[in-house]
Image 1 (tube, rainbow, N blue to C red):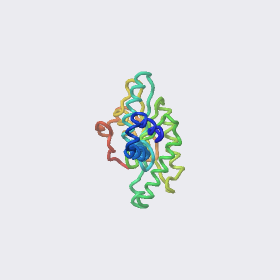
Image 2 (image 1 turned 135 degrees about the vertical axis):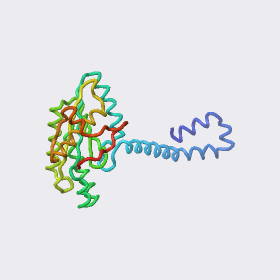
Image 3 (image 1 turned 180 degrees about the vertical axis):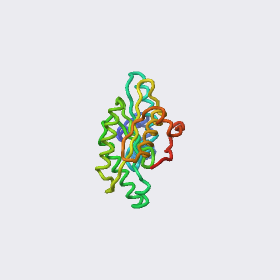
Image 4 (image 1 turned 90 degrees about the vertical axis):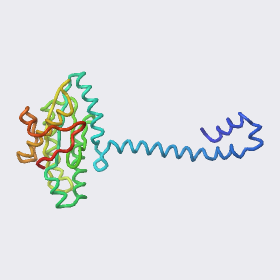
Length: 234
């Protein structure tokens, strides 16, 4: 409400009181702009805090907190529509050596550039999350294993060609899929993580698909509610 509107309403309620002593009314009207500015500042602060809660501040990618809520929605939709869901776990190879040799600022530049390569290879409904460190998870609703492998290879080649941070960086990727009621985050993550481990063990800079229980058994079970980064060959 404007100060003029507030003044009219106040005077209309008790014009005699306003005429006798307008001081408090005028002081209240003078405070309205300050209160409005304060309320706006609080509102913007709350919005920014919510954004920061789901965004990784370094890369601008969504984080684990955002992943949990989004995957619950994807699981529900897959069960209703019998749709495929593909997940790709991506890990930058030998990232610790980059930090050790070039410093953490250069390492941060590598992460930001690699995140950009991933984003530009995805459509709007396909999302990439930073799980922590140099590890990322791409979630692809509606994609089969072959389609997921094709996209993972584009990401792998794109990172290698881009030279993130001006360095010869490569990535290893593990791919897993499920369909309909079988879509479940922990299982898919476990399978993609197992495939990623095989890519690392087999020489890095490659894409590996999950191929059954033997691959899934290569890594320990992932704890609830969301997996922590697991120690592995990096």
